[in-house]
Image 1 (spheres, rainbow, N blue to C red):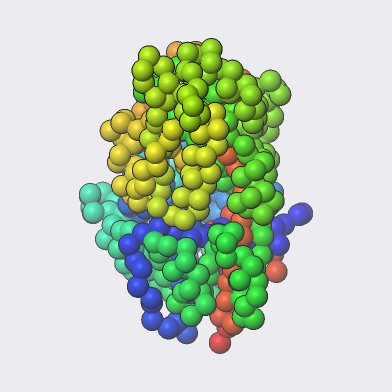
Image 2 (tube, rainbow, N blue to C red; image 1 turned 30 degrees about the vertical axis):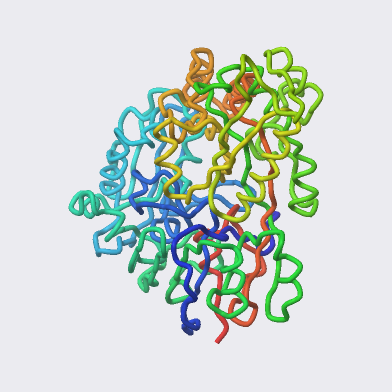
Length: 524
């Protein structure tokens, strides 16, 4: 089995905590969350709109993924699918307890699964007709249709098993003051936008075997910080305020490599940077203008000049490793400035002496939203310049990571530079579903043909092969309508204090989560 050697998933964050922290505590790991993981508002995984590594430590899942995206037993020690896909049977581990002492069993899982109804993650179990408790540690899912994506859904952080009684008893406060799972760490404190502190679950002895250590964890406490500026994070790494700087900005790579106690590594990632356009707002209600903006994005120049040539050049909305990314070449979005200018000419936007286009006395001016992290600002400034080459005048408006999501919901934006982390084709449903305008459907796209293709992709697949075929068709149609433009597919640059952190030789998971933390150690 191929495994990711020293593969880490965490990084620089955005937030309000800008002061230097105290010197490191002997058995406490301090890490800065990456930008995409910052702004989590709750550890109630059925209310969360994004997640971070803490969720994977508080909650175990029924199933985990290994480094090759295969499925390994976790809380479910085995499972069987009926030949026709209309029934799944899960055999659960015995001797597992939730953090509050409640026994983990089939009834607890059934009660937890019932809580999905009416949430944004209802679709995870959209094909499940009935959950049947067969025995104390055996659970059966009777299906309305086959669902080839069921195991993936159960393996994501949003499939973290919560203790139903605790979630019900704590009500609206659940996920803020209390979060009860079976994971290797318990929630000690959570200051929204600042930090999350976890303490080891000393009773943990049932970890999935994609980690060498199945419990308890080696590290007693973990402090996950949200730091506002990359320069502050890097200085904290130098001075010992944080043990890990993950997702190192390009401008700090050479300096980090020169520090004697700092080690750097590059690893695979699951991120896509993209320019999203509000199709309901002028001028992007004209597909020719959207296409022109998309073709004005010079991905190669961004990769070479901002990221030192590292990473991939995307031409779709998915990471290159997914089979559903393999669309026909005619649908791929690639830099073509001459065609962008021709499209704007055809749409009636005439270039002025300063290069900025106008139509009917109105300039082609847009507001380009972004987040306050230095990486976002740098990329957005380049996008601003590239759009100007085609004739757009873009003014940049910056928000912090938590505020911008609420702003999207108002629907007043025109365009934005964003990124996401996900390794499954259902990301299309999340960001382009017509029933989720504002956020997460920032493009505000609601197209009848797209909705038909979406329904087929999400519910009409009996096998993995059909799933891929249906999602390629949905993906191709989205690409043809240009609600977004791909920008960059990065690799991860990680820096850590080698005097403090002992990395395992291999990490057998696709991202930095439970399996990675279980095998991580701190130097004495």
